[in-house]
Length: 119
Image (cartoon, rainbow, N blue to C red; front, side, top):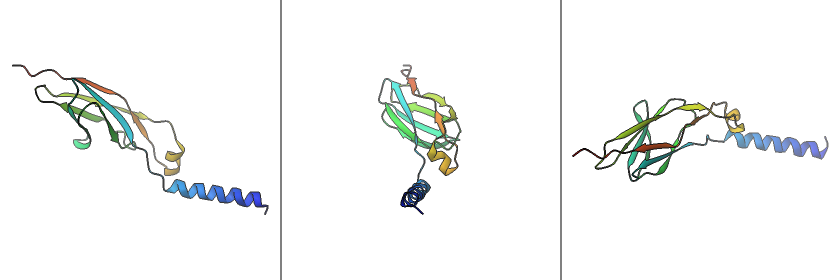
């Protein structure tokens, strides 16, 4: 077998082994409030999955779940504000193909206006 073929086979094998150790990249959801400085919890099915404290900030979330993400923000002197972030199928990546996993992207950014607490 020619040396070129051996090198090519070795390169493909190393690439395949490296791909086995790939981990999914987390999705990013940018959360901003007006006024800034709120604490926001992101949850799926009632379970907290991320937190932004203080706003503005970025929450890192699992991209292999398609569930909606609830965002609830609070700040002293203001009423809580909330939003729902929906998912959509992400473009197919080599990483996802090698892991045999579907990935999702989330709408964003999340922009919430906090209303002052009535006196």
